[in-house]
Amino acid sequence: MRMILAVAAVLCSASAFAQTEKPPMVGDKPLVQVKPKGTNEAAAKPAAAKGKPQSIAVRLQACLEIDDGTKDRLNCYDAVIPPAPKPKPAKAKGYADCRFFKEEDERLACFNGFAESIPKLPKN
Image 1: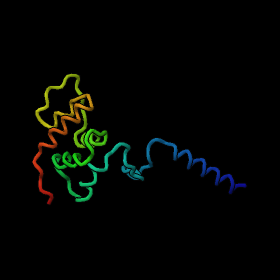
Image 2: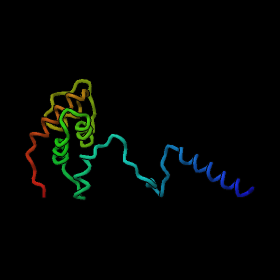
Image 3: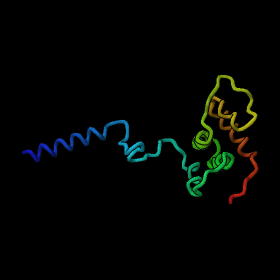
Image 4: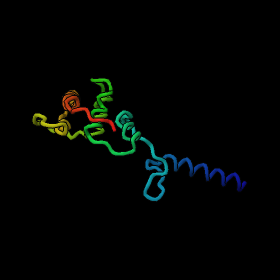
């Protein structure tokens, strides 16, 4: 009987532990690292493949490989430069100003224009 109670206690505590919102921690790092939803693999692949940080220009150009006019391409751009919408943004003078556009279509068109105008950098 004690064995059954011990197993039931372990199973109940394990199921309660699994339902918490925070992942289990080992020191200051999560025990299991899960990729957040909505991240774009195309933006992450080149950096992970080379193992060294890439410039913003290279990452923006990598987003051009995704079909134009799609939410995935905008998500790729937003992963490089997070959006910070303003009510009435000024005309964009550089790619960093594109993040201020509230409308997704305007932000995508702005990023596309600047990403396409960046000179192609050699892949060393």
